[in-house]
Length: 237
Image (cartoon, rainbow, N blue to C red; front, top):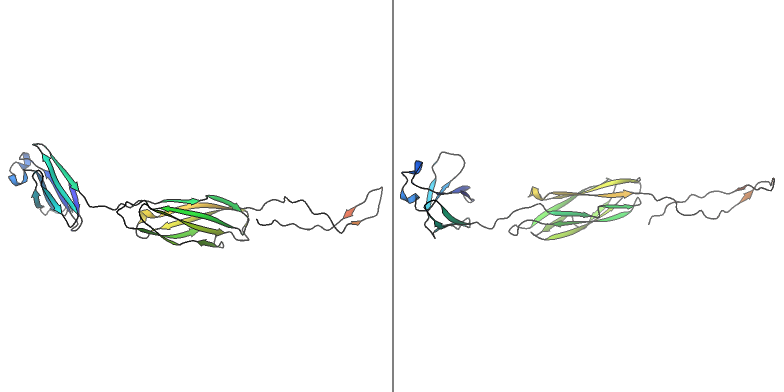
């Protein structure tokens, strides 16, 4: 078994050895319990450095690296040990949601999306920071409530994203993308996508009463009426 020794970039090597086979001539210093050696672990042929051989109840304490190795019990064939390691920070991918996933409105309208981020790092980690980048049509304006966010482990926050389609946007489905980037921790990077549909509603209003009527000559009791048409435009809601 080996345990990392971070301050020197070496390893502690743990073994329980008996005076048989290759180890038949070992000194009793190595046979009374857990034997602890130190080595770089880099494949070199240099010898290991013996640190200690523990008896039941004894321990090796490494205060620099906040770890300890304790021998609890042993018999002829095995040894029971307890290893206490320092609090370790484990970085995890955040949980991110972008809501709503899809919205529809007229060209030139502003729609609101919410980005929710949960920092899933372990409690021993420091706060993490993300920068926010987006991919939308080049002529569409946007506003974020914040372009930089910092979140403590186990906490979450939301930012609001306002996206306006161009007045000239044609009816279509447009993809919107949010990229969360942590320059220091690549596992934190996350991309989410939503949809903005531009649509022009059909003509649902009845025509107005005609004005400026003119009549041609009467023939066989029929009249032909003519008036100038007026174009209608869809109103934004």
